[in-house]
Each structure stands twice: as C-alpha cells, then as structure tokens.
Length: 319
Image (cartoon, rainbow, N blue to C red):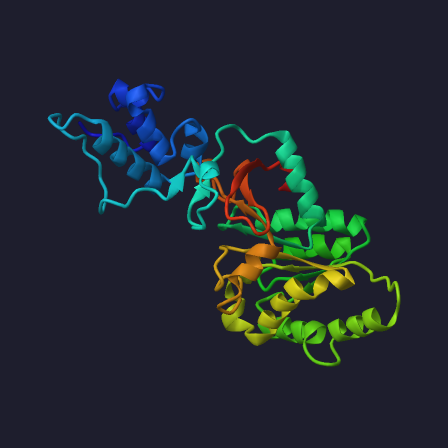
C-alpha cells in the first residue's frame, strides 16, 4: 500500500497491533525506542524526517515478515533515533546526545522553577533554531532584570530595527547592530581585556574595599554562532571571564545561540566542561506546522553540571 504524505496519518494506517501502544508484546520495544509511556511528547519533539524514520522503524520491528512492506520514500535507511525514555534509570551515562523524555506532561511547578532560575542564575543560555523565540525570551529576561536594577548591554550583530526600538525604549545599550563585529570586539576589549578594562577596575575595588557593592549588570550575547570566526580572541576572553570571574562583581550573562557546541559558543577546545558546569540551558523549538517563526509551547531545560534534559512548558508571556 502507498502511505499518505502526512507521517502521522501513515502511522495510523499501520496494523492495529502497532497502534495499540499498551500491548505487552510490543511494550519493551516501545521503551527501547523512547515511545512509552510518553508517546505524544516524543512524537511532538520530532521533525517530519524523523517521524518518517520512526514509521519505517515501526514497520520493520512489528510487521510480519511475510506481509508486503508498505511503501515509504526514504533517501536511505537512517540509524535508530538517539533518544531514550529510560534516561532516569541510567544516570551513569555521560553521552550528551541522549535526551531525557519525561513520562508525564511537564508541570506548572517545573515552569515556575525554570522561571526563577532564568531570572536569577548568573549564566543562562538559550538554544534553538531560527524562529523558536530565543530573542523574545532573552528580552523577557531583560525586562525582569531591569526591574531588579540591572544595567543591560545587548550584543547582537543581527538585531532588527523593531527589536532595537523596543530595547532602547527600555534603556538597554545595544552593541554591534548592522553586523558590526568590530564594535563587538572593541566592547569585549573595553570590558574584559587588559589592565585598563572595566573588569580589572572592578576587581581592584573588590580587593581593596571591604563590602564593596556593585551595580548588577547583565550582558546579552545574541546570535553567538558566528562570533568565533568574526570576533575572534576578544569573545573567547569575554566568555572565559563570564564563567570564572563575573559572579564576584555581580555581573551576569545571557547567551543566545543555535546549538550548544563549542564552535557555536565561540569557545576554544577543552572548555566544554566549564561551560556545562556553569550554564543553565533552555532549548526551544519552532513549530513548522503552525507557520513560520512560531515557537512551540514546550521546550527543554538542563541544569548546570547535568547531562539530562527535561521538558518544560513555555508560557505565552515568555514569547
């Protein structure tokens, strides 16, 4: 038989034994593939190509071998999906590619916990594809931190005129608009590099003045993916300083990037453990089924020093 274009409809056309997720004879296979008991959230987390791969894997696993195989158009047979529903039982695993998918819907309490961490943790990282709402969530963080007395510096070479206007109205200092990577490099040098930097001045005060009070400052480093090549050493020094030195003088950072690799974080090799141990991560996704640039209502977060991801609701006010 030919399958429809929609992978979910294709899944529904498979034999009843495959559709019945609670049958004991297929339960273990579901768990191995991350399907049970959280099938809905697992399916929603996949893109169309991954869903077709899942349909093909189900047919291979459950259809009797003497039945004709339904027609599935794939360029090549892909490897099994990298996921597990048993992550909580395998805390010893250190492979960051294994995502944790919880067995129940994320709770409002979990959302509140993530909210409080994002508004108070020293180093926060927002990760996601284009259109997933990273910049709008960073702006939401800034609005809350401004109310707490923070000075905000927003570094972004791709900031739109609309976002620039909104941020300037809030009193945010914008650096690097119009792909001005030289301005970003100069800003990093001014703040963290050399004896005359603001970081050195603040640390001189920290070392000489008992009980010194520092105005809280948050640096938003947005569209970070290209900085390694186009900004170079100044951004590496800035990121290292943010991890190792900012906390003592009440400075914070919010990083916005497309992925959590060292290249996308503009970091040198050997710095991955320091990044993971100090950053609170929120991963967001766009929903292509609802149109361009529509963020999904569920994201994932990862606590500092942990490897597992946990689902969390994304409230409308964060967008």
